[in-house]
Image 1 (cartoon, helix red, strand yellow):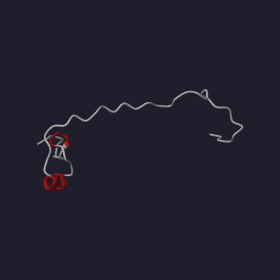
Image 2 (cartoon, helix red, strand yellow):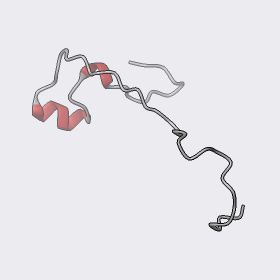
Image 3 (cartoon, helix red, strand yellow):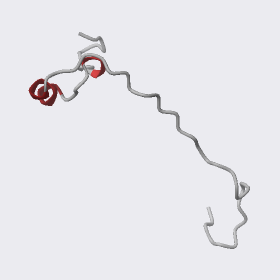
Image 4 (cartoon, helix red, strand yellow):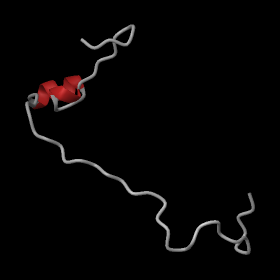
Length: 57
């Protein structure tokens, strides 16, 4: 693909390429700081350990 300044754009100048939607995190149970560092997350609801066969604990 030619990226020279003379190449016409395929999109109008005022078009957004993407918009993100990120919902607010709902606070729930949290691990202690030591436990969070050990597990890799502060939130138990976000802990998804890998299990053989793709199942959750």
